[in-house]
Image 1 (cartoon, helix red, strand yellow):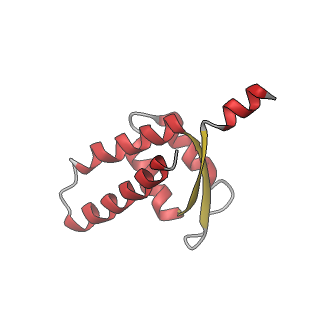
Image 2: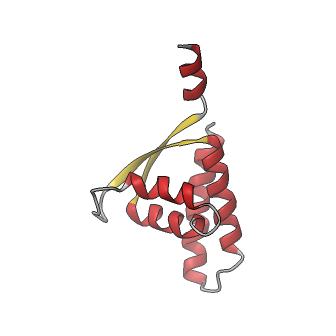
Length: 100
């Protein structure tokens, strides 16, 4: 039971994220961290409704990888509109990270 509690303490439960947010997260993460991208993709398995929101549960290490990957992607974006979207996505994940 103690081991189970210690494992659970490393898993974060997020507010719900939209399919679009998760799709952008996958794109930001997949090249350098495919296993984390697969975890994100698996959240949407069987459901591909753009209006649906997904409750996310990740380990703190995965959240750090996602935040780092999105931060790195920001440096590559030239489109001002996409830059705004990715910054908002980064803030969503950072706020999730800070709840740890």
